[in-house]
Amino acid sequence: MRYFGLFVGCMAKFVSGSIFTFNVYQGDIKSLFNYTQTEVELQSSLLNLGLGIGFIPGVLYDKFGPFWTSAAGLIVSVGSYMLLWSTTKFVPFYKNNSWLMGIYFLLCGLGSAFTYMVALNTNIMNFDKKYRGTIVGLLNSFIAGSPSVFVQIYLHVLTGSGGTKYANFLVFFAILFAVVGIMCMLFLRIYTDDFQDDTVKIIPDNESINGTNTVETCRKESHTGTEMNSISTSQDTSSSCCSNNNDELSDKDSMSLRQIVCNLDYHLFSWMFVFAAAIGLVFLNNLTTISKSVRLSQHDSVLLILIPISNAIVSFSLGFLSDVLKDKIPRMTLLLASCVLFTVSLLLAILKGSAFGVLVISTILCGASTGIIWTLSPTVMSERFCLQNIGRNWGMTILLAAVVGFGIQEIFGHLYDHQLAHAQGGNCFGLSCVRGGLIAGLVSGILSVLVCIIYMTKRRIQRFLAQKRRTES
Image (cartoon, rainbow, N blue to C red; front, side):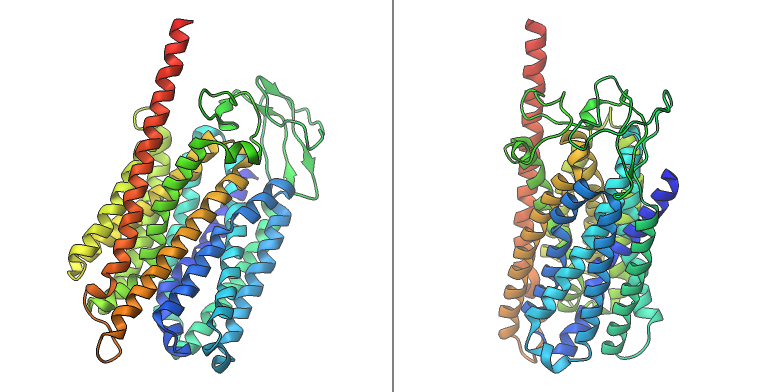
């Protein structure tokens, strides 16, 4: 059943990738409702912010398990997409109330966060630590690759005018989330097998489910869909706990919210991800705006599938390779490489983005970097900062990423509208139209590199001091 749960998780991830298709229909939203670029950026930013409120479904998952988290995701996702569909029936009203549509997009993102968390957390817990990179990479490849499929459906399968096509797209997503939500409720459970003992024992929720030698069991809660049989903890205990300085928490089963908030390593690691992930979100959501500004919009059908395809390929291949080669190439080294690639991607777009070949290279680098950061970050976090609290810890991190991404997108929109106000004919052409927003993203990329280097240096010093103490003792 674990493998069927993995299949369901992949389908859930695939549907969750729908929120990354905003760039394909943002032009139709802009023309249908006569929005400014700032208003369009607001919709996109709130969509990402909704996904970033993963803290809520993360905590819900940790407390109630996959069944109720899936149920909540089904209700929020289907309801929000139907609310968005209703906006196409009341265009005059929503022309003057873009903020209300923004709330609907926020709810869409939140619904996707529920589905995302259920698929990720359940499958991380269901498989051995040595396969964790592969599992996360496989799941991430589905959420990364699905936008390329949805883009082709929007461009080549759906018919009608922009407004009609957009409305049908929203109904299509509502149906997909309903089907996947029901599948998650029925089939996603936490199964952990022990090959040494078949004993099953019910223990209170406040007791540990991990141990130092062999844990004879775990809890079975039919109302949450959480089922665990005996767990052999020959797996490294570092998969369940983390430390701050001297691995002082390595013998514990979990970290409290206060412990994680006071953990400097957690902050450094999280902010590295935040600054890097924000770049991917902003670049992806504004790709068609960039191509239009440099008069390359005729190539949108190509550009729009480059990020999902490169993201999906890198996610799966790197997830597997990071498991196989982690002793030779640490995951943090690969994460540092992704931060550098993000920065190089934006630098190329700022300097020579008007050349189609350069824009293609920049887009591919952004897609590959996105695959690395979104595959390895949750993997490292589950290994370093407690698997038992992965929903809460990872949820807080993607919330921060969404907030920073929201700020950068608003900067992008305001700077674009400022250039547009001085342009002739109501259109802004030239790299200067988007350069200001891209520079804001470049600053975020540089910060991600610096924070990653600080984190890696701090960890190296900690290991050196720990080794020195062991030698002296």
